[in-house]
Image 1 (cartoon, one colour):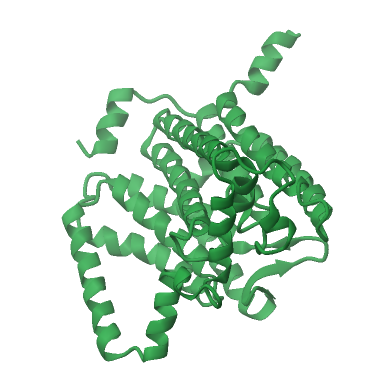
Image 2 (cartoon, rainbow, N blue to C red):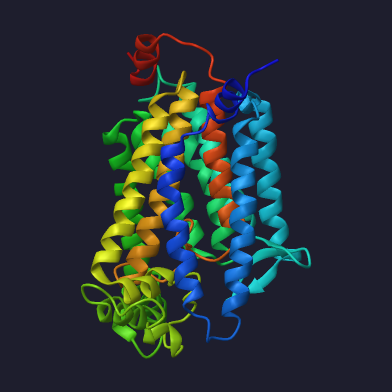
Length: 382
């Protein structure tokens, strides 16, 4: 009979507990901020539902860590999952529920699901698979266009909802994975230069003045603080009013007086910064930095290219959300509705964040041995 010590070691052996330790304070920071909204209408509902989603998310994380996902290395399986997810995104135009002007959600009564969260994870998987098989010829310019096509299809489907924020994340994932895959930077620069030339031609010859104004307001929301920039302006006010040590938990006036829109989701960082100040903001950024570092470290333990690239893709996935959300809260990025990982209210994004990390844990648990020098040479295209 197996001893309790060996059983515990077997159960927890594949889990990166240091990564879990970095996640927990981020989760508690989000819950504490939501709890401080208690006097607001529906505030307790957000808090209670968030606890449920976090518990479900942890369950997904641990269950996925015990599943052997080696079948995801099969091209036919990944293509099937990719096409299926694209079809789900396409179905939103007929079956989707509109929220904040975008048809991004499928509603199942008590549960609403945002398919783009699944697509982000699927895109990481299929790009990791594509680049892992082409390390010898990776500098061929055709791989920029082929991999770009995998990202372009969901990018367009999401952009048409319209969900500009998630479309930005899709593009960010593709660009990040292209950069770490070893593709020629000269070829990549040439492609982007062509894109800039095309955009410039459209700007001067095609776009009407009102279209140019919309683009400028999207890029610089603080130029119109009484209109499109109102949310960004209130967010920067909340962050600035926190000063060094913050106003204290439950004393954030911007959120409690309803000046700050959606403080439980899109602008939870601003609500948190107002209560905890610069000290608390730096602490949460440090925790996110440690989380990214641990994911990248876990990626380096991959036995093959696919595992390494998948881990890097998950790190890029998180970095995209963190940079865009916090930049939006500071008035440095367009207001796009991107959630802050493990802090913002919401079920589907939390489930797929934990799912991605669970798959990463599984890859280490079920890794087939490979010589480290061979793996390194394979990844670098040696």
